[in-house]
Length: 109
Length: 116
Image (cartoon, rainbow over all chains, first blue to last red; front, side):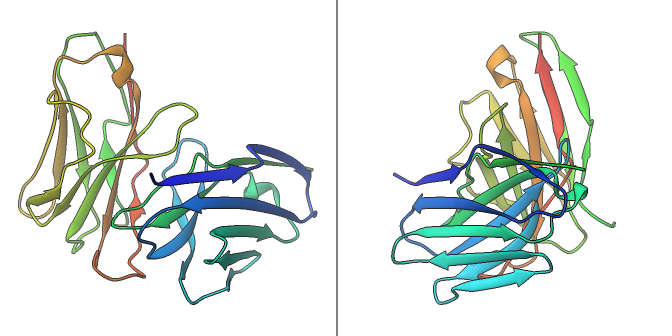
């Protein structure tokens, strides 16, 4: 059964601090893994896409890692900003996208 | 258009009524997807269109749900005899090249459906 587990469920940090979000997945077959950012009341927006052979990919202050052997991924946010407050969703791709429930991040000044 | 648009943004209906949700994908995107997001849950796949055909409708939860796409563009998701458990945000996405690993789905803002 395809499963995606994200941790923590929610996180509060101060502006300027770094944080790392975790994702464990069980999907078969595995094609690639994406991280999406979803602001409240909006649709998800793609941050990164990593294929099986990629270990890390950056998009500005966002850096995603992937360990396809252990089926783990992380999303690191550097120097957080208030606008980073959102849900971050881990999405492995088999024949379709499998969405995790997300980590709700709140950045306070 | 600049992005995927959906209408209405909010819909409140009474149990038992039918509703239609509309999605306008990005111009030129051949693939279109419908998802449902219930409170506190991840996005749940409903149906996928390639052009006007729906090769994967495995996520439709019951025969009360149907969708069509015309002209390779606009899609309508119809829910008949709505139930309270249908209350959710319905999201539409489109993409250019669904067969490629780097293909990106672009999401609309969603339609929030509330069934009283």
